[in-house]
Image (cartoon, rainbow, N blue to C red; front, side, top):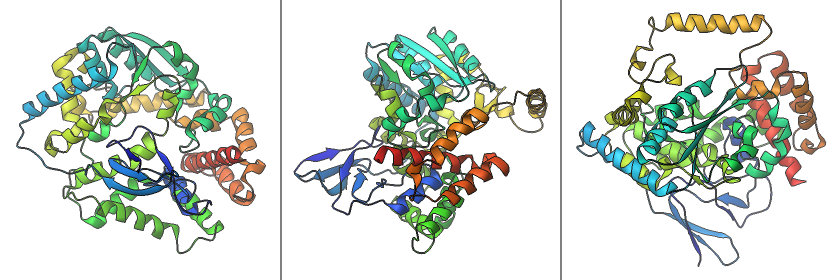
Amino acid sequence: MPTIKTPIIPTKPSYVKVRAPHEFHWEAICVFVATGFFLDTDTYFKDLMVLPPASINEIDEEGFFVKSTPWFHWHKTSRALAFEDALEEFTQLFETIIDEQVGDKKVILPLSGGLDSRTQATALHHLGKDVNAYSYDFKGGYPETAIGKQIAKTCDLTFTEHHIEKGYLWDCIEQLAAINQCYSEFTHPRQMAIFDEYEKMGDIFSLGHWGDVLFDTPTSKQLTEAEELEYLLKKIIKKGGMELANALWEQWNLPDTFEAYLRQRVSKLLQKIDIQDTGAKIRAFKSLYWAPRWTNTNLSVFEEQHPITLPYFDDRMCQFICTVPEKHLEDRMLQIAYIKKRNPKLAKITWEQHKPYNLYTFQQNTSPKNIPYRAVQKLKRETKKALGKPYVQRNWELQFVGMENDEKLQQYLFSENMHPFISKPLLARFYNNFKNIDPVHYSHPLSMLLTLSLKMKLLK
């Protein structure tokens, strides 16, 4: 009987058939609109599933799923490891993984103002790899490319900067729908704005996804099971997501309530993780159910142009994390120490999450020390707004705001593809709430409805 082995964190889903009726999985779709990702092995349909991570899966001769057996369980078995020893192990492992993944190919490195790609830049520079780096930012937003440019210059990397224009989505939304099959909402994948540029950038991507989860502690508090559930629900449910999910649950006449269903699903998945330390348990949950179904969905965009590599996804890196004392993972300590050790100049460049501070000074990003900077930045935003040039902070502001964007949005939302799947009154309610009540709160529901509209068009 054929078998399929999946990595600890798969880079892309493996879809297999299930012996079940071919019909919409309404409950799973409600979870999708609430959180932005499908939970566990769910898909749009009851007769299609995604193979779970870190498992060996038996498939019958007709291609139907038979059973799944885990080959790895997330755990927390901390060794008596001094921080300097942990740093040395991470250094050797990280650089070995990157060296093996990229070889002598020309590397394409997306640079942000954070730590994950900066850690990769440090390793790639140390290993002497041929790297073409790039950054992008929102036109009218924070100049994230300025930080990427500084990082590239410090590491002697070729660099290009890109500024994401308003309304870019509408020129490529159907191409994106075909690539990711509508398993992710459409306002996030900025990489589509420069999709055609990737072909000439290099040979292979080195992507920094998931480093922020592996190399930080979600919470240093030890929580009860009930508190862990509440913590996770608060993290995964998006603004306005619960309201849209409840509305669809009622429209589709599903039993009980959506909230009860979601709580039960998440609680069962959480109970399967045999880890006592809350921080490690939350990290394991995210790596099992969040990374494969949310973070990874749009990796397919990169993969359309070139092979992708992800050093933080490597099985050895995940296994290493399971044995490192949690205290060494707090506040990104290992990554920061690695950058300081290999390239101190990189550590002096602004850390976007703690701007204007860097890796040596970010502890000062507390009140009242940071009040002057925050006050100046707020004044700049208000001034731009008064001049008719509002500060762009969020992806959806490029896609949903303005007359031309609104026209395109309505074309998709109110097309016949959505009926009778979702009623026009429900669509109008969430559209009007976005336009007239609270665009920040209703931007996620609107993006999810747009995603469902494209999915229905794909299925016709």
